[in-house]
Length: 363
Ligand SMILES: NC(=O)c1ccc[n+]([C@@H]2O[C@H](COP(=O)([O-])OP(=O)(O)OC[C@H]3O[C@@H](n4cnc5c(N)ncnc54)[C@H](OP(=O)(O)O)[C@@H]3O)[C@@H](O)[C@H]2O)c1
Image (cartoon, rainbow, N blue to C red):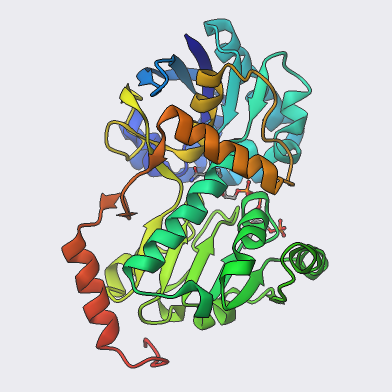
């Protein structure tokens, strides 16, 4: 049986309150202070993961008690030590590979500094996340009758590990490409890579709103703590794949923009009778792609550092796509703001989009 660990952390005070109700009643500063002092701990044992090859795996989810902003703002050495402690808990339980969830994968140079300090394999899960983000945006564009070869794709968070790979893989398939980041130097390097690999030019910018306004299709995958995609910026009929955790797309979009399709990126069906035995906001049998990558590597017995750092090769993305297929993992149906979307709801989005004039301002 393959054995893995996977690190998670609360993405919001609301997440903390799922376990400690009092978190809703006290100040966020107090909650953050208590979390900072808390040691990592096991939150659940995942069972029933059975590959189509017959191989089985089980794993332990370990909480690293820090909020996203703490992961970014606290002394990096302090955060890394806490993450390494959590990895050691997984190892003690018998895990031979550990996946780094959400912001635990962002610190320490994309997991490299964590991998240097423990003697079991480490992966960020970003390779399979890229596979599913690409599959997801293609599927969502198709249901909205968007022809990708004529569409404008904006990648927000394009200079990141997931964003840059999505940009490079999708560049040859879209009409126009816009890459948004925070740093022009990194964007210039990326556009050079995109041109070299796909012979496709791209517009680069640090202005998220301006590039979102132009896009028919958006992949948003930043490491931001707050809202990045706002309702007033989105074109009627646009499709957004929100891969970020915490989410990039403002909750206000769900309330105010019935004419755009927002899908959650990176959610997959796990083969077998899988139960993560914890409320990650997903139905039983589903997992985030980064969790799934860790499961796939355990099922395959590939106990090696798999995805680390910021550069993920196209070959590796192809390999992970094949491994996922071999073990029976597949993209879950389209989900939006924690709920499955029915064909009727998608038709409703299309109807509302048609009733708005193209280019009409939302406000
Ligand atoms: N759904 C899943 O299964 C899954 C799996 C893995 C990761 N994720 C999520 O995906 C996201 C990105 O992960 P990654 O590994 O690609 O991260 P990364 O390599 O650190 O890249 C983050 C990107 O976001 C940009 N960014 C950071 N803070 C920002 C801000 N405040 N406003 C605008 N842009 C900002 C960065 O710009 P700079 O280049 O300037 O830093 C970079 O382009 C995270 O939210 C992570 O939790 C989801």
